[in-house]
Length: 81
Ligand code: SF4
Image (cartoon, rainbow, N blue to C red; front, side):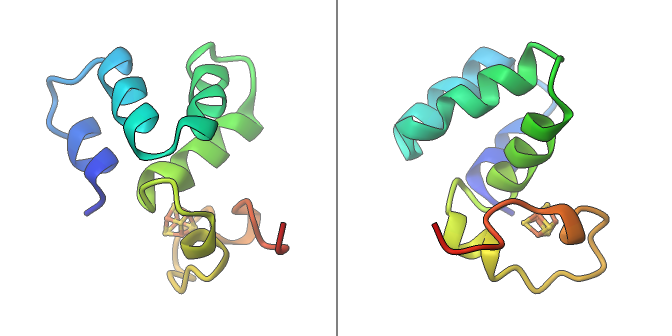
């Protein structure tokens, strides 16, 4: 399990705790998490979910092999940036 998901699923972390960890792992991805947390963007919710799953590594999301995941068809970074 990724560092971010471990934190999310420990049942004690706040959104602020997650933002702090994302800042350490990949500062450029903080805005996506903030957008998801404000609850007004499903796209940001999906993107941040995949970023959480893969510790903010777009390459891993693009090459994700978990085709059974319900987000797989709509995951971000399918095209090389
Ligand atoms: S599509 Fe892949 S990267 Fe995205 S949440 Fe599912 S398993 Fe994780």
